[in-house]
Length: 505
Figure 1 (cartoon, one colour):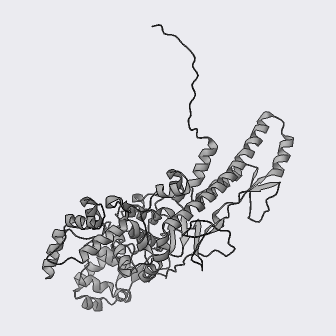
Figure 2 (tube, rainbow, N blue to C red):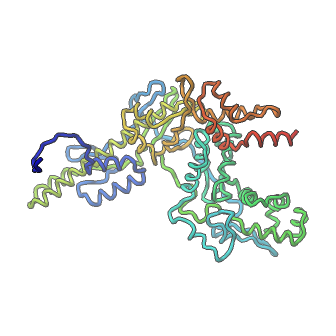
Figure 3 (cartoon, rainbow, N blue to C red):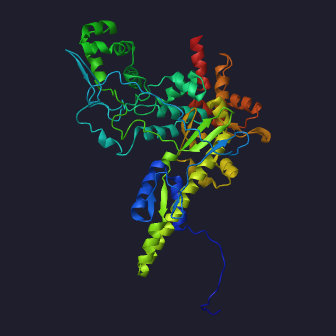
């Protein structure tokens, strides 16, 4: 067979990512801070784009991206109904009291005439696994841009907490102050999230196991106690010392030794141990312990039971296309390069305005669907969270899953129960037997906890028995999943529980 060259015509379809499409996708996934920086950069390089202040009237000489949208949203119908002129309201404000012990330079210290606990150079990074010492370079062991919040959120992802527990843990992270302490009372958090204080305490116990050790403490005494427990050095003598830290400041070591029930040498060793601890767990991390979160969406409950969903106009850039300047420049252009540059600037400005408007509409649409899907959370609290995935929302709003994923990343919603990232409204589901309605993973974990709490000393449930009971309730779950949920609840195995109950009896 002879080898020859020939031309053939073929027709086909392919998706081409134009620069404009890439820009629209990029804008969708940016946070409000990143979006503002991006728009500023576009304004600097495009003379046809102007920044508006929100008071301009859109006229034939100028075009604006109208992104200030609001609507009533009925959870039952899922429809937007008109506009509201009511002012926006933030969901909550949390005041953080000042530190119990703080020196003028921001470092914690307790000193007295004959003793001194100086923590001004200790605890960068905050882990109790690192001892004090002038030769230890804490900053070299930390990533330059790592904040305490991001550090804790990474650990939250690996903690096994899901659903309602993850909601609670994220709220606890948000409540940390610049030191790494959680000042707000647990009762307030429980009331805001519609759950019991015992659930807040259980999740808080898990979070206090995060690094740096001592974070999530209520005060200095609690912070030091957590670190001592981590080192297995929290005994009654240490507990007595922490309860009387003011005696160290006054130099009353003799009285302190009597209260602690130790001699002077033991007291000296105990003071040395305290010096190695970190009173400021957040020290050494970039930025504030809890960065200010600016919501992208506001949700307000109205008197008629509906929810008003509104974009935060303060986070939406006001962008204008200066048509007058475009017409003036177009008249004086002479060369083809000049005409091409002006035409390209005009097209880019128009596309940016359209992209910003589409981004705002998409965020509002996805937010409305999340509220409709998670109506139980807004009405009854965190225990009423439903299993929800990206596909469910994507199908409801007629978008691709990847689009919903970009919308829910780095976007925050201010609700009457607090400020949450949109992605935290998504939780795993456990399939039901015989095609019934799926069960929330969080609801299944609470069932497991309730079964174990109610078990008799002579009838401790194994993981296999728990599986059988759950299947009796129509929940299709594997034994390894039960074991994983039990471990995330910090519940010992059946063998260990039998030993504990035997000792107690």
